[in-house]
Image (cartoon, rainbow, N blue to C red):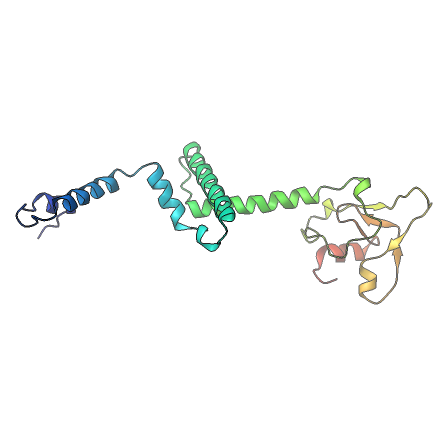
Length: 194
């Protein structure tokens, strides 16, 4: 027994079998043709519907923003596929790669050393998120320079956590945290709980 497609079955329908619904039959034929010739906007809607983030919020402004971000990311994906046709990346994998790239670009921008005017007089209460990046070459200790004192010092970050009070004349340029030269510097940049 051979299998028949829907279109072949439709062509063999007798008009007297379905006398009341000729318009329904015509619309079914149109749906079949629409599915076989789906392009452009229909295909984009199909891609965007798979990972719909629009239903997760109630505010119309957020929905609009998410919709525009979603459309823009799909346009970027189609452009990516156009210029790299040999690379068969799926849409969801493409989105994950873009998200990872955004995260690493943000971390790189944060790791750029601040200028002297941005260095605060006191260390921040929270640790810098990129302090555990594993790249010690980005973290440079410099002498603390102020206009008034000849040898300025600040309260050290690691020793007070151990119960000691200590001051240092050096500061990590990228983290803006006062640190001692030596083991404590590496402990701060390599261990989560120093």
